[in-house]
Length: 438
Image 1 (tube, rainbow, N blue to C red):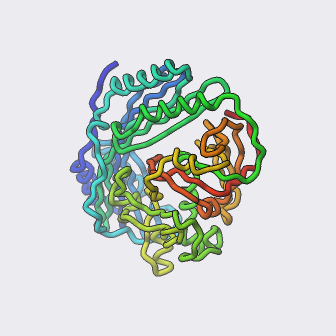
Image 2 (image 1 turned 60 degrees about the vertical axis):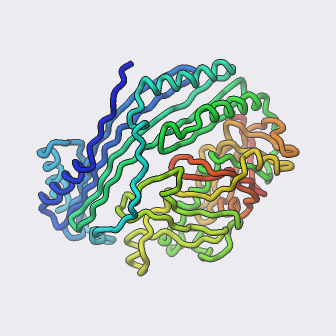
């Protein structure tokens, strides 16, 4: 196995290309996005390494404008002739494109917080050999415990820059690491997954030991009848539910009567006072950049405080139409936690169900924010503050606003994807049927 060092373009090179493309443009306006990502993935199954690969992805996206007509072309070329050809192609397409009724002028120069994204050189330089050795250790732990372990270990490092002919310039670089692990034994299983800004921030050994222990406890599940029960949701399950509510918080969708927030005003107590949601890119677990993909500043923004929604999201078009300030995206999302642990939440539950993972979550009704999905990989009956025995997985049909309304306790937050959320203790959660999948 060969250890190879990652190589990325510099910020100076990215901005040099931006300036050259903008200077060469023959259109009314041009916007350019440049990104290069060095990513690596190790995959394992049945306690053996299955894949260990590394790839580089580079692209320049050029959007040319003639009045309200526009067209985009993406190229992977890094020589000037190839880049110039992509620019001319975007201009040719823009001349014959249909007019955009929601056209907006290009975003002008923005003021960003002096807060670069976290860039971890250890993660950038993490070699295939190091990745393989760590996965081998995980497989050895699994084999010794008598479980079938599978999952992924991935890292990525990215350099990116945005610019346009109206004066916008933005650039940054960041790293990310992810570990996901599933342990199966007999007719039971468990799962855990975490992300971080650096490979050494992942609590891999703790995750593996906890997941193997829960898989061993999940043998021979019993049936619990569908109905409404108190639940404790692990942070991984919360991360697949709560963000879906925030995705729906569009001011335009509300004004057009297409969302839950069309009938529920800002300032109304909709959720438990324990619920605090914000966009917080500077959170210690995230440390992402100071601007979004659209070039708008990405600063901390309160979304819901003490259970009261404070704002809806406004894109540039809807903000201009309604006389508001554009908010940009509501991500990365952070839900404030506490100093309690998941074990503390379980100990506070006299009777109920522990949900480790929410799987195959789909919207049922966007106006009520009712979602359906299934539990998976470690669902347990809680009795007298303990995991009493494993149960068959259940399908749920649950309103997300009602879920947040019924939050009774929260735990310490964890990062899952680009979201930071805690485990939750919820008073009522509706299950509609039993499924025999593990």
